[in-house]
Each structure stands twice: as C-alpha cells, then as structure tokens.
Length: 330
Image (tube, rainbow, N blue to C red; front, side, top):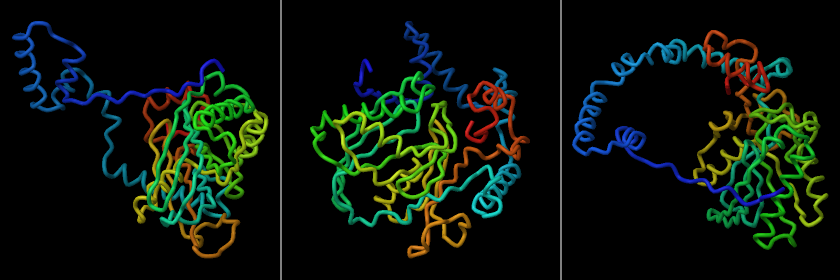
C-alpha cells in the first residue's frame, strides 16, 4: 500500500437556497446581482410547483410522489416480509431474512474498559479506539479508504488491507504491544452462528471479493491479523452496522430499541421478543429478546415492489454488480 494516511473529510457549507445559487453562479455587477436576487426570491416565494412546471421537472418527478394508499400498501408488504423472515417454514425463501444477531440486550451504563472497533460497510472504513467508563466515554477514530481494486479483488486482499490499516492505527497510538478486545462491524448480509461467528450470505454496496461468500468473516479477519505478526486482537463480537447504531444510541438513551442506516446502503434492526423468532437457535434465558437484523435492502427482490419501481430504478439495477438484488436499497 502506498499511502495509509487517514482520509480528511471536510464539513459541508451551510446557507439558504439563494445563497447556494449565487455561490454556483457569481455575478460581478452588484446592482444587477441585487435585482436578480430579488427576482429569485419572488420566484421561490411563488412556490416550487410553478418553478418545476416551468422547467419541465414535474413530469420527471411525478413517479416519485407516492399517495397515502401506496405508502400503506408498501408498509403492509414489508410487515408480511418481516413475518416471512421470522418464520421457521418461510425463512428459507424469504427475501427479507430477519437474521438474529445474538445480541440480547442494550448497554446498562456499567461497561468499562478500552476497546477497539472496526467498521466496514462502504468505500471507506473506520478504525476506532474507545474508552468506556460507565456512561462516560472517549473515542478516537481514523477513516481509511478501500480502493475499488480491493473491493473487487480477493477476500485475502481485503482482509490483509484491513489488518494493515489496523496495524498502522495501533502504531500511531502506541498500542501494538497490547491485546485488546475488538468489535467488528461488518455491514453485509450475514448468517450469524453466535456473537463471534458470521457467515457472509452475499456481497452488496459494490463489493464482490472472491473467496468470502459462505465463509466466516471473523475467521478471515483473525487469519489476516496473524499474517502481520505485529498485532494481536481478541474479536469479542461481530455485528451489523444497524446493531452498532442501536447499541451506541442506547448508551445515551436507554429507551432506544431500533437502529436505522441510510448511507451507502439502507438497513434496520430492532429488538424482538424470542417467542416471535422461530429461527432462534440460542438459549431462552432472560432477557427473552434478541436484536434482529432485518436486511430490508432486499425487500422487493421477489418482485412484490415492481408496481413501484421507476425507469430510473430499472436503469440503476441494470448497471449494478448484483442485478435483481437489493432492489429496495437501490
């Protein structure tokens, strides 16, 4: 790797719509600019609808305006898919898989210690060091890039890259001599066998690394770290980014029971009663609940949302790596 320097991400600028227009199209004559600005403000005040009609945008956007009846229909379909994913007899053919995460509870405020975290789920990934002291915490993190050549390469290349960036980060913090517990956020559809075992079901979000699907991603990470010889970690949990979001928010708000991601992809998780999870293979000790990773990005892969898809949806699907899959996400 030529450069392991963390990526610097700048903050977006803020301002009004007219400010944005003048930043994009600066006008040198002040009087003319003020006059045009007033006209722009009047035009905006006249309503977006008239403006859209004037430029012909409304015709393009009409397919994106959904009635309440359509929204209720989509909600009912999603609930049906949730139940299919949770059912013992319907899970195998369900498109929304509703995977149990083996995470049974949220933080209670007594957690203490130093922990590492890896967050992989897009073209960038994060390495974090977190100090927990009850309800107080301190977090340091760096963001590293994953080149497209690695996103489409072999699984060994991907996990070696992750291990190299982890080594680089620990060297910066002077922690290469310590064995620290690590939480691995792996934001792709996985069948979990326990807190430290996750079998990749399939790649999404532009990844297509060979030799990973059907294998345990925790084991692949451990093997890559061992190949480096200068880093020692103890993977104590592998979770989806939705679960990580729920857990981190519950650390601040004890009533949080749902995690939602809208980013490179979209997904959600929530706390479900064990009695409703017919696919559950763990123990039934209290608390009788488990976080469910819905994997709702695949909603519609069985064509139940075809009535809703636009020409743009079809075009995006046609040029994607996983044609016909993750249709709701796309």
